Length: 109
Length: 385
Image (cartoon, rainbow over the protein chains, first blue to last red):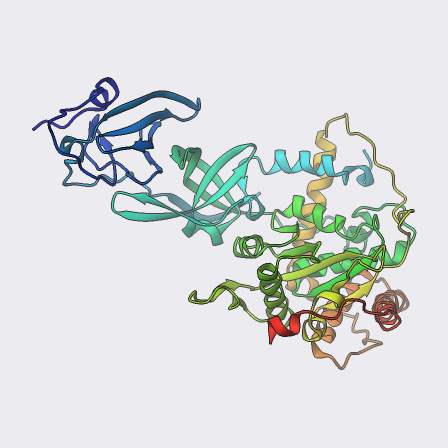
């Protein structure tokens, strides 16, 4: 089954109503695909592409998220959709490269 | 521009922003260490703020400051935008003797003051706190310039800071990031948990311990450990304006009082400041010559931070201490300051004069306390045990 893309999420009110309700935990976007769990307890997740998703609210059927583009500080869109098994399909976790370079040769200023 | 005018806070700030525009310094860390979830693991950072931009410094670099930042990448955490630091070079200030230690101390904020010699001693004490390890507390009337030499040094070196009403979180952060001097203002009327942490800090740093262990935090938590290597404390408070205002003696246990060397800085009153210099609004910019004058001052400070350089200049100045203390902690503070007075003095007569001024500042403090009724009994016995 193909994973929903970010466009699917932002443009679709409801993803497959017939699917069951899932309490999800985390979300990640990789190459345009949502393949993580969605936070059910508040908080925000960095999508790694200048955007992040913030959890807004949830009820038995719907979960509402905001897509935020930082830098301009704008909330692009609020969207709700059915919590669906589709959005929690995830077997792998993607990590940002958090490494850093440190030139230890001390330079005088 | 004269060197005196260059020590205006706004001008030193302008120098700081230009000279350190790519350099990240300990006093730019502005928050607690935080963990960011990345995939299935946590990565740790310290938040920093420089020129209105928020940065994330990898925690492994916290002991490497100052660093020049070559590259960053944008990220967000809890709705806040950050520039994550990804490429740094280690740097240090060039050490150069551009003037004698005597001229250095004289030139540093050479302002008209009601107590010019005592102000010279106070500048020497502030410098001793940076280069050596001491624990000092000083009381004066407002406007004496107690914390100004420290503020200027903080802007020039980027690794000393004065904080007001020190909560435990503030205290821990400013020591952890490597500030060499922690200036403490408004230590009265703290919340009890902050008071207990501050008391434990005074106990450990006053004992010249290598680490500060805060074992006063909530039950069930383990004690926090913070490195106190080469760390000095300077505590400032004003003469009480009314019977209700407290001083150090009203707040802390005698065992803490006996660890932090007290001084009374005479001059001025609650209505008239001891410092007579008048500052105006800065409207002009520093030119190249001004920048170089401050840079010479900064590099000279770096030169005299080096104990080997000091040892060379002290050859032939083996003048003995004229006073000693039975309290070994006080004596250690006094001896460290006197070493720098020796460095400053051009003759033994001059040395004796300034040592006496230092000693009298201490004696006057003790006289003040002995003649004063402590209105609020120490409350900490039950807290400290």
